[in-house]
Image (cartoon, rainbow, N blue to C red; front, side, top):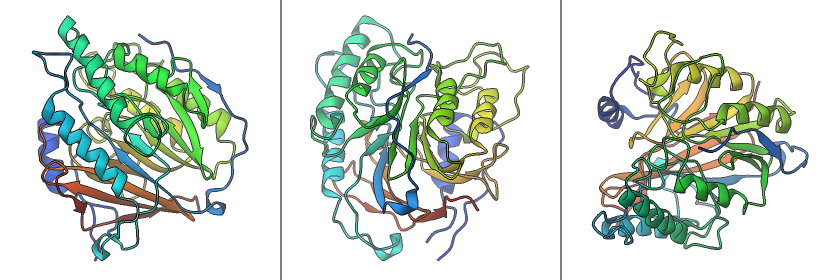
Length: 377
């Protein structure tokens, strides 16, 4: 069975409107104050071709929103802890599970790791004394569940996180301090920004880049942004220059804020900070990657799954970069939640969604699969 992604308007909409529309129209391509982000190279290992090293798999999940109790900020919220804990149990048991025919068939293989699309915690966007205590409680619980390298927490796989607006919209704070410290524990990185917030690594010749909340800022546009980019665009440009010598190298990019609503013309007249992601920075992001072999872009934020092709002009392009918006994985509000299970092999990207309707008490694959080629022709 073949389905195509329903057209999605790229006129400006509110976040509420976006959540409503994407939850109804989600589809597929084909169903079958930290410093700037200048990188320092960590490894000089030669880039290998992805097609020569076999299949890899990984999970993409985000918007976990670990929440502490406001009336007792040293304690984690029981509902949040239960939902987040059941998600980790689900992730741990999934390898070896049979994939149903309607989701493409096969068996879940052991993942190389989990990429977290941000909003790890819930209260990093608040600055009261109580909320600062809550942030510490929330991040400590995240580390208890997820660890870093697959050995410190309950999760059995390494985790590679970006930060979201609920971790810190300002580019500073406890969550970002912890992310920077965690980055130093990762021994497989190709490049790490000086502020420790952005980094890249390789799995079987595929280059992965984590870029934080948004990708920016375009230095040619002199106006205040709502959210701190923390030097992510500068890091991206230098990482591509230093670590992607072969134009055929497939690349996977992760950030937090959604592309679809902010893919508009670069308008110098819009009020400063009026958009979560300045459209001029979105355009600069596209210019930076358009000549590279981008296999996929993943992000979160909207709490609604969508998938589309992006050409820098529209999120409803007929040809372009494969983009995947992950649903929330374990927000404390519960209910419908999901993550992606991704396989890459021999130039083919295969993305499936694993979902729950009862906060990970039960779960299953959704009845679809996204398949696309990521090698240049």
